[in-house]
Amino acid sequence: MIGEIVTVTVDRPMGTCHPEYPDMRYPVNYGYIKGCMSSDGEEQDVYVLGANKSVEEFTGKIIAIIHRNDDVEEKWVVAPENKMFSKEEIIRQTHFQEQYFNIRIKM
Image (cartoon, rainbow, N blue to C red; front, side, top):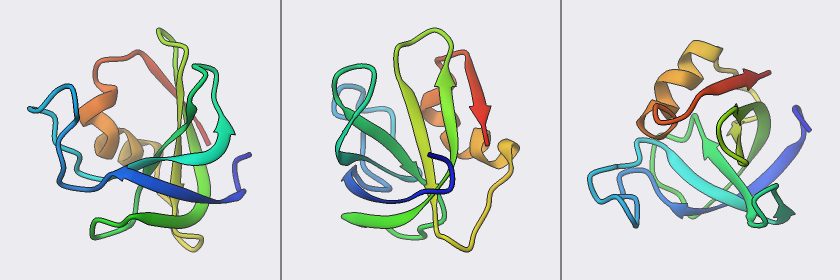
């Protein structure tokens, strides 16, 4: 799965607030992959890194998987095909939400 090209439907664009936690603002685009079901029974959630503006859809490469050790979900990290991010950068950019979980990043 890492290295695959996917299209993300962005339902929480950069700059918007979480629907249940209005104090949480998304510094990156966040969405899901239509038709790709995850372990929580919902479509697979994705952080989009490397897009410098809010978008409705994004096609890019899966560069990492964030496994939540204390949750049933894992989050995929997608970036432009020609761009990579270090684990430290992924942690920094997803901290706004992942700070509440014990995570492990697979690259």
